[in-house]
Length: 600
Image (tube, rainbow, N blue to C red; front, side, top):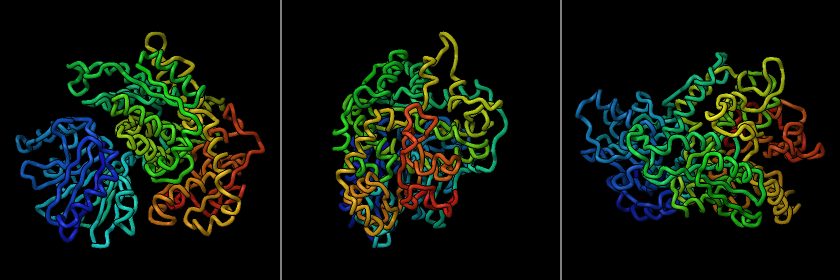
C-alpha cells in the first residue's frame, strides 16, 4: 500500500517537480518507507511507498526494461504469480521482470496487451494505478472494482490532469476534483472512462436462485484468505470478536505457518499470528475478541481508549478520512487509534472483515427485508457504496499510520461465488418463515463439529454488532453529548445557509462538517466526494422504506433497529433526516438511483 500523485500534461515537468514533491509529502503517512519520483517531459509521478512485498527492490515508480513505460501503483495484486506464468506462456522470453514486486506484472500486461489489458486479464487484487507511456505520450488510470483503494482525479489551472490517492494532495492545486469511479479505466487517447470488468452480480435485477453447497462457500472464502497472506513483512489480523473478523482470523491461524508464495514449501517468516482489538474498558468487542484469540492461540494485543481520547482525535480522523459521514467517523476513530498502536508493534499489514455484511446481509435491518428481490437489491446497493464508507474507513484510518488493511471478503473471485447463489439462503427467515440469525448461510458453512470447528459456537452465532457500537455503546453517546455542547441551536438554524451542499441536520453531523471545513473548505469539490444518505443501522436510503418503524430513526447505530437489536433505543427515540431535516420518512422524490444516495 502506498500513496501516488501523478500529473499529466504539464507544460514542463521539471518546473513543477518541487511543488509535486511537496504535495506528495501530504501522502507520506501512506508510504513512510521510501519516496520515488519520475519527472520528464510533460509528466510527473511521485510515489510514497509502504513496503509489504519485495521491500528490497520493489521501489516505485516501476519501469519496464527499456524504461519507456512507467507505473505508479497503490495496492496488491494477489494473483501476480499466476499472471506472470500466463504471460510467459503467451510470450515466451519476451518480458524481463526487474523486481519481485507483485505490481510489476501490470507493466508487462500493458506492454503485451495495450490499453485494454485490464479487460483481457483477470487481475485479482486491490489497486489504483497510473501508467505513463513515453512512446505514445499517453497515460492510463485504473481503480479496482469495489474501490478498496481510494483514488481522486483533478484538473489544474495549467490544463494538467492530476491523480492522487487522497484529495488532500489535490485540494490546493485544483479548483475542481472528484473521486475516480471504482472499476473503471481511463485512457487519455480516448478521453473516456469505461468499466473493465462487469460481473453478472452487478445487475441487481438478476436475483440468483441456484442453491450453494456449504462446502463450496467455505472453500471459496478459505482460498481468498490464503491468497491475502502474501507478505514479506510482519502481519496480523483485526479482531473485533464478531463473526467476520473471527472467521478471517481462524483461517489465517490455520495457514500462517508456511509461505503461500511458495505453495507452503517454505516456512513463514513470521509464523505466529498476531491479533489486535480495541474498545472502551469493558466493551463487548474486547471480551469477545479475547475469547477468540484464546481459542485460536494468537498473540493478542488488546487496546483500550477513553471517550475523551476519541473526541480529541476527531479533527485528525476527519483530516485523514476526508469525509464528514457520521457512520464512518464513529467507526473510524477507534480504528485510527488502534492503527497507531499496531504500527508501534512492528506490524505493517493486517487482514480485516469488511464487506461480509454487505454481501451476506449482516446488518440488523436486513431482518426487515420483505422478500428475496429486495434483499438482493440491497446487497448490491451496499456493495456498490462500499468505496464511500467501509472501504474508505478501513483504508484511510489504517493508512493514517502506515498500516495496510486487506479485505478478503471483497476478493474478486470470492464475490463471484458469494453473490451468485440463492438469496433465500442469506435471508433472516427460513423457507417456513421462521426467524434465524443474520448471515445464517455464512455461519452455517463454518459450523463444524469437534476438532474441525473454526470458532466457538457462541462466537459463530453472536448477534451482529457494528464496530462503532461494539467498541462500547458510550462512545457514540459521548460524541452526541460533545456535539451538544459544541454546536449551538442558532448554528443549526442557519446550517442550510452555511452548508447548502449536504446540509448537516444534527449537531453531531454539524460538528463533523465543521471539522471537515477547516481542512477542505466549506462547500468545495471536497464535499462533493462525500457519501451522504439517510440510513438506519448502515442501510441504504432505499431500505428505510422496508418498515414503518424505521421512520424518524435514521441513525447509523444498530441500536436504532427496534425489535431486533438486543439493546435497542426505546420507541421514543427520534433523529432528524439528512434529506429533509424532518423526523419523518425520507423525501420520497429520491429514488434508489438518486445521486444523493452516493455522493451528492
